[in-house]
Amino acid sequence: MFVLGIQKCEACKRQFTWKEIQKTIRWNYKPLVCRKCETRHQITIQSRLLFSLLIAGLLFIFSQANLPFNLRVTVIIIVFLSVVLSFPYYAAYKANR
Ligand SMILES: [Zn+2]
Image (tube, rainbow, N blue to C red; front, side, top):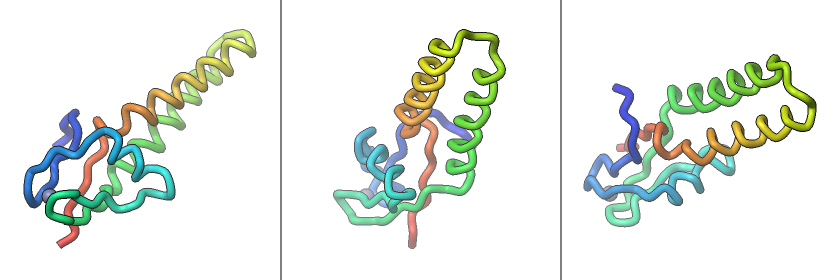
């Protein structure tokens, strides 16, 4: 199921923070490790796909829009940043057991 909200640890239910999840998307999706119980979580393929599709889709829409070049560049940067910054809210992780 698709739920908006920051992931909890599947083992101990500890709430991961926005920052912890942000850190995992750099370096090609590092595993998310719970600080309390040390369970490793792997990002789901659906989340990776959603992330790429969101960026590609939004960039495509705005590259088609009839906007002056400067504005277009600004919009693309804003779109990119908002997709990256909101990533922890729609990313889903599965515990590695
Ligand atoms: Zn945990």
